[in-house]
Amino acid sequence: MRTVADLRSLRAAVQAWRKDGQRIGFVPTMGNLHAGHFALVELAHRHADRVVASVFVNPTQFGPNEDYTRYPRTLAEDSVGLVEHQCDLLFVPSVETMYPGGPAHALSIHVPEVGDTLEGAHRPGHFDGVATVVAKLLVMVEPDFAVFGAKDWQQTLVVRRLVQELALPLDIMLGTIVREEDGLALSSRNRYLDAAQRARAPQLHATLQWMRESFMEGHARAAVEGAAMRRLERAGFIPDYAAVRRADDLAIPADAERTGLLALVAARLGETRLIDNLSFD
Image (cartoon, rainbow, N blue to C red; front, top):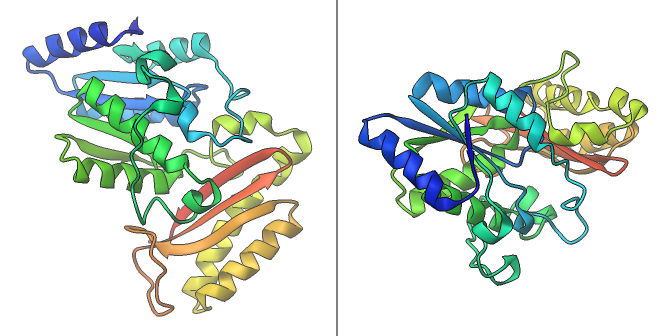
């Protein structure tokens, strides 16, 4: 695996592969890679001749009181894992490469509606930062397709809308959520949890399962959401939301709807904020 930090080297490598008629897949990450990330790399390999991954902790998607400075940076370990999973090229840009005029003076892309609810409402500006950095990376790498994880469901909808609106010539591929045996979705932030919090953390997934069962049994959406919030609080979480939404646009469904839905939750355990979702289909 080759590692590059500058745009010229990245484009030279990609252009050489493209000249040879090779199909290129792209897996953007913020590093601190785990089995969930590597599953995305494996998925990309099944559909591409060459796979590019990026590691960049994007400052513009973190709020002023969030964990940008302490977000785990483990580039050496990440590189070893990517080599083991046959990544062809690792792009590790600097903040200066991604934001030549500085993050505070960078252009910003806003994806309305789907980016304004749930995570967007609780983390103002978050999806503007996500949309901006993803657009930059897609333009820089120029892949045939990019792979994102289903755990960040709302993010994938934002990215798909971004690609559609900007008419970018690539596909967006979705990887399934990888979980621990007790149901906890793999996340780079799981390492923040102490032993007691880690023991409680699977209740997030258990609550999603309960929401699906309750809604499919005919209970009203608002009642299911309210009960799920109380369930999380009893389990020691401080929930931001527990919501039943349409999967394709995050619109609020009618109580009679039973297909094309999912439940989404976001909650804190101590200082750690976790998100998860579960399809009803």
